Image 1 (tube, rainbow, N blue to C red):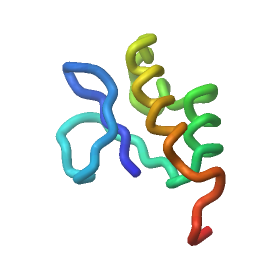
Image 2: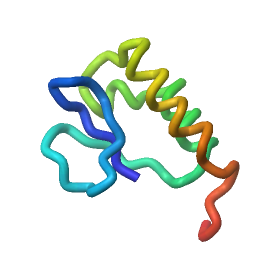
Image 3: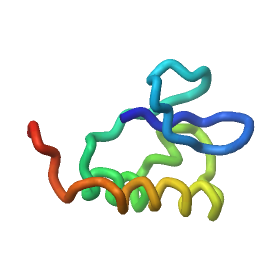
Image 4: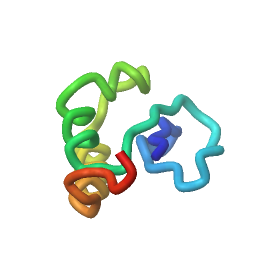
Length: 70
C-alpha cells in the first residue's frame, strides 16, 4: 500500500501511481501504526499534520491485525 505526499496533504494512493513523494506499507494495522509513530514523516520528507495523522489512522483501523499473505 502506497502513501503519497501531495500539495493537499498525505494520502493513501490506491493506484500506486500518483505523483509525489511516496512510501510503501504492508497491508496490516501494526505496520501502519508503527509507521505513524516512527519515521513515516521522514520517508515522505514532510511533517504529518493532525489531519494527515487522523486520515491515516482511520485507514489503519480498517486493516487486519496481520497480513493474510505474510
